[in-house]
Image (tube, rainbow, N blue to C red; front, side, top):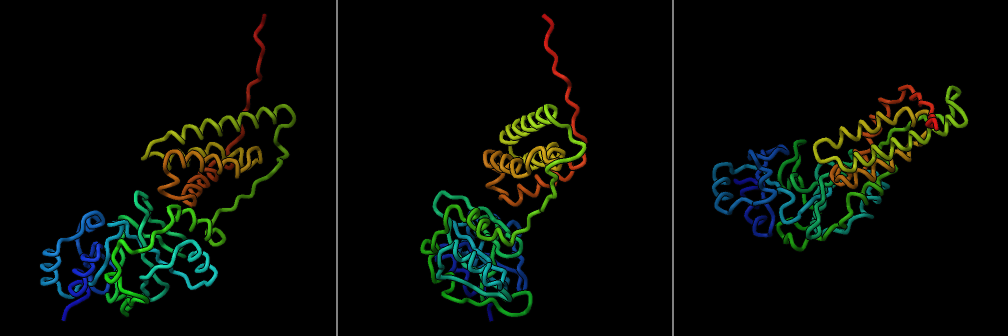
Length: 298
């Protein structure tokens, strides 16, 4: 008796995919350093040798190779399913586990689509990720099953392409169900200065926003989230006292993160979460006391 990897891995490789052995009854890949298979698949000889030594291994696919990705729906809410399916084409390959279903696609040539998780509703799994395939056993004790053709019957080149903006489209489609922190921002405060002093303070806050946005836009990979948090912390006092709208700060931060690449990598929700954490930290900071501007003596 042989398991799913021994039985179907060679066919999966021949169809243009990167097969991956899975620990039987679990979702965990059986190989150390398996993520390398997202770029280079196992050889047929290795598959045969591994199958002879571990004949009961489960079967998975390393995603990203040949542009292959999975859209894993983990919801039974009809409205959410309709929102998701409205953003992606039909696929000839789909599997079902204990709950929800997974459909398989490929990214357009030259387009990098990142792995994203949308609040337990749907997972977009791409390069660096893996997916367990039928007839492997689910940890809950039942086998995964194909709803349509098995993956190895559909060449990777025949999978439908997803839109290049799939990440943004899913985020927009699921916006009603995605968590977002709500801020209670006062439009006016009794202890705020008035008149010219308030106008000066508003101009100062907007200048600070513009300066920090420029710095964030030019920040290189590695420190972008820290800069984003710091931007929120520095502007929190102005947001919570109604001097600068939260929406204005959000728009500036998103534009800056689009330029430095963080928005593409982490997505809008992650960017806003970091920003909002900073805003919260700066909520009760005192407003600055602006010095009086003096004209130079003649």
